[in-house]
Amino acid sequence: MKPIRDLKEFPQKGKILCLDVGKKTLGIAICDALRTVATAYPTIKRTKWKNDKQTIAKYIQENNIECFVVGWPVNADGTKSSSTDAAESFADTLADTFELPVLLFDETYSTKQAEEAMLSTGMRRKKAKERNLDSVAASFILQNLLNSLN
Image (cartoon, rainbow, N blue to C red; front, side):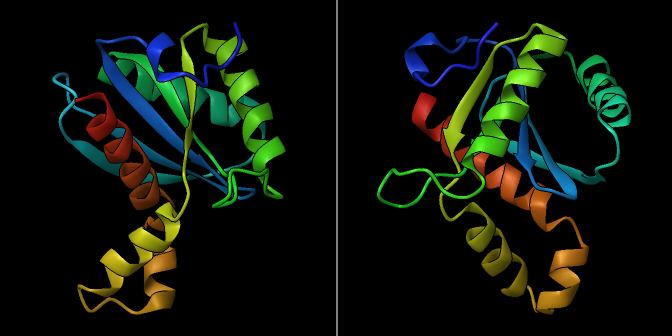
């Protein structure tokens, strides 16, 4: 199974697990069954794929996940960024491992939006990075997708 890049090919129903892929962490967000609201979950500290896979499998089982979204880091002009290949490779592995649809979805400015949202609550920048910044970014990616679908 290959990752999807076209919204028309993405399943119209089912809960979605969104991953914001970093070198050291995985930001996690999940939507409700009606696909209206994205919720951030605790950020996963990445180790070996074997461990990451077990954690993701637990989220799938506990939340009845039917498809994935992986943040696709492209530049504002649509060209590949330095992280694009890593996200695409992760999406390939995810699709092959779990045999669920995986959509690559533009994550442009999601980390910046998440950081600004966290700082607007009075949180310091260092604390924001320690406190699930990547998962809040994943929730922005997923919410943007949900808004596009509805």
